[in-house]
Image (cartoon, rainbow, N blue to C red; front, top):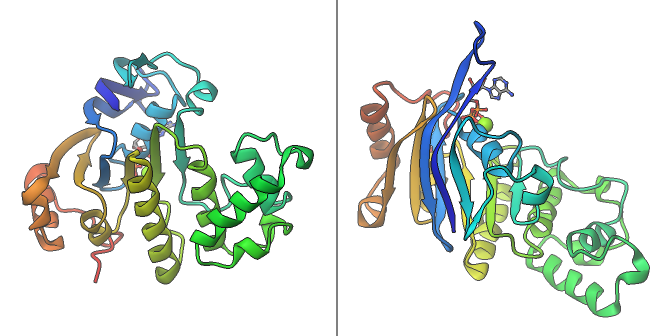
Length: 262
Ligand SMILES: Nc1ncnc2c1ncn2[C@@H]1O[C@H](COP(=O)(O)OP(=O)(O)OP(=O)(O)O)[C@@H](O)[C@H]1O
Ligand SMILES: [Mg+2]
């Protein structure tokens, strides 16, 4: 469980460029909660992830991961408990290393082939087969040869190989073609459900925001302005979501960049 209590962050404080990016944000994410996050550009979504990961120490508030107060914990230490994916498929994998070596690293085998047993290799193959992309037959190939979608799917496998306590997905399918995005989203759902992970997924695709997970939050100007779950959410259509945003934010979503779904 992730508990965020009243965290704030101002960039460039005391200057003309001062920007209040997080304004006393509070959020509780239970294990098994799969929360989709929507909001306009600059709403503070990625900054919220950066705060959770420890890219900076927040100005106010506390962050708990289960019974551990991680508010002051160094980023590299938090990385043990937190899995994160970005929009860019080039992040999160080492291009010159083989698929096998990348997975070995993710599995905590240090990337040394000598430490990868035959059983490990079979486990890698089994997991790769779940992707339905034929990667299980390409263990020795460098990751740099993979397509963006294949690479992002592999990154997802790696980030969850040893299930993290929280999984943060920052528009992780935005750069993929629709068919591949669909595959990666299906895999995301499967991994989150099977491991009962606490997951937060930022998306600009309103349909995905409603289709995936069990809860949707809206962010605007550094604050959470709406939090929808249960029956209310199940009945919601994309138009309703856009309308709710307008009411809560006092302005329309920048629908140019928003994918309103099909
Ligand atoms: N390192 C930084 N230094 C200064 N300002 C920053 C920094 N990181 C983010 N900001 C500012 O904080 C605000 C929130 O940015 P953030 O990246 O969290 O938005 P976002 O909701 O993820 O938007 P998008 O949908 O475009 O990804 C923006 O005004 C941004 O310019
Ligand atoms: Mg962002």
